[in-house]
Amino acid sequence: MTEPAADLRERVQRLVPQIAACADEIERERRLPEPLVAALHEAGMFRLLLPRSLGGAELDPATFVEVTEAIGKVDASTAWIICQTSGCSMVAAYLAPAVAREIFGGEPCGVLAWGPPTSSRAVAVDGGYLLIGTFNFASGGRHATWLGGLAPIVEPDGTPRRRHGAPERRTLLFPAASAAMHDVWHVIGLRGTGSDAFTVTDLFVPHEHTVVRDDPAERRYQAPLYCFPQGSLYASGFAGVALGLARTMLDDLMALARDKTPRGYRSALRESPVTQSQVAQAEARLGAARAYLLASLREIWQAVGRAGALGLDQRIAIRLAASHALREAREVVDVAYHAAGGTAVFARHAFERRFRDVHTISQQLQGRDDHFETVGKFLLGLEPDTTFL
Image 1 (cartoon, rainbow, N blue to C red):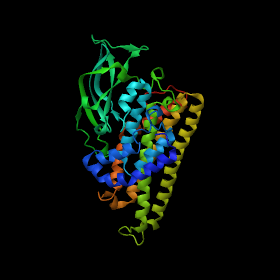
Image 2: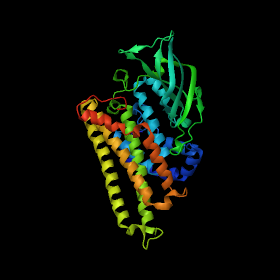
Image 3: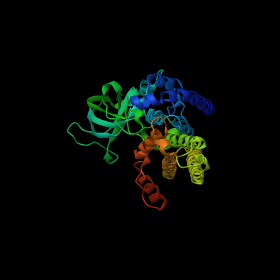
Image 4: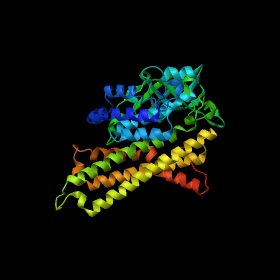
């Protein structure tokens, strides 16, 4: 899919009614219904960050955020799955072309999901590794054709293998049917992501199906997008999900305020000076956070296109803009939820679902407030922890 961004946005908007119609089922079944998955495939939503050589869109980060935001306005779980699996698909740039085609080629394209390990190891054997481990938070794993597991590499005698002086850790990719899925995703929000756990035991994975993520030395497909670490796209894309969710929440509050006369009031909620002030401030906060994120990504995208590399200062800038957007979106949702009063607590209204969803987003790795500490260290001339940049 290499169509202009305008065509992509049009296809996203055509999906909106179907996603909206499925929202209750997604929440109830804790996964996306298959007809919707098929529609997402047809619209190219699982190809957003794939290389063009594989028929992907190879989107710039700002446009990617606009897509996750647009879908997040309708259903956060669907948007989360698109963001997560798209980030995983960036690994295609690090695989041999034939292997990348095996995993991501075809119609519909392959879908890769993964999550952090509880415990894992990969024992080096002839031609590859024997992988054992349990992995969690595999968003979209119920719709994936391939899964990935991060593991330290050990020699047959148990000695850790080292690479550039540090223990070697690789991500091993294998067909989803090779793993045992565990139904553990019983949560308050983002229920439809199906972010379950999976286990493999002594699974042989060929070396060609493994990568060291974000290592330029292993990158085979050269393009500006793949100068960005996957973490930068996760942070930005999930911020887009939260911004979209907050946008709809605030719009719903304004619609409610026109018609609702709260108990004890003599006029509609919109006549309340407190509500007027809250809405105005929330609008400013949401718009400013969105503009800051998109402007940062567009500026950095142009710079990377010229230089062919992404610097630490640019990774820091993305982390700050994304973390700020996530936090501001959460705050706007809280304001709207509280201002909606008793209406917000009923399941027949979407206020409570979006409240649960945004607070689940903020509990995830990308929503941690300690990302601001990382940025602050860098700005003050100290050495930051780059683990989640």
